[in-house]
Length: 200
Image (cartoon, rainbow, N blue to C red; front, side, top):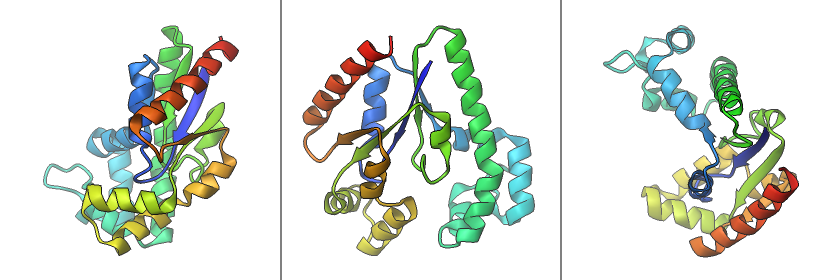
């Protein structure tokens, strides 16, 4: 099975590219959704996080409240590292389990959709890294329009994810999403056709 690691940044259009893969029938394993499920129902993960950050990170339903946890870690690099040490190994384990099941079912390709693929070291689990890129000024503009945040809040979130220009330098494949959705889809179709030929 050939594994593509898909990454980008807030406002880059990574989710649109992930949806494109799904439409081609390529399974997409979503790291964010995996984390969400762990926060909802993985008792071991919930217990470790409560031990590390205190019971105030729980919601009324005894699941991890992402907003409350986010406040604790957003501007605290040490707290973020402590969170990652607990959560990332379980995310990798869950995604590898799903990947194995897909492979057993005969899937030839699989996409790992991971926002912080390079920052977390998850690129070691994929065969190739695809980065969805847009210029920084367009990235800021799209997030401002979409999320109704202040400019300072948008810049904080972009800084927390790392520069798309730096990610682009490390990518095997760069998807330039600065144009129309149709233009992006044309790029994807062209690149994907080559992959289907080379990795059959």
